[in-house]
Length: 219
Image (cartoon, rainbow, N blue to C red; front, top):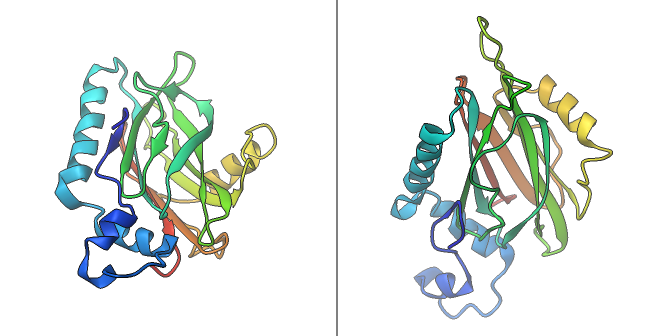
């Protein structure tokens, strides 16, 4: 298991061991996605991921950051593609290189020397409901300002593969996120990409927990 990933991958072999899928020779991504979503908190993997982040927080040496959790219930493996830092940077542990279906990915994003804010995004290569290539993007805005209330928002979307080079679209993403709230769902905003479904939420604190759930529609 790589750095920052938690849980046993949910594969066709996993499904074949379940009574409802016994003898099914035509397993689809949505089948693996459905089982992965049902097992989101199984075997304490969610608790292990959070503990990992809390340990990173204790040793990060700063007083503002974002505890980021990404759950993969897409039916296929997510592979790191690109990241964007508007303010702050990744902490001592890197972005997970791969997050298998049924795993939590965890990373800490912290403030930098020139800012008291943690604002960033990360994109992963994955598959849509038809097993076609696409990119999944999640973004967090922890705009902490001294002596004022915290201002936290989130944004997420799915687009074609290699859409996120963070040269052209990053200002649009930041603008969308700044207009959003502490919860964002592409379903509620009628922005689902080819059978995918993603949502994200964030707390309101100097070290808020950011949680993104990436899955397929109608699981």
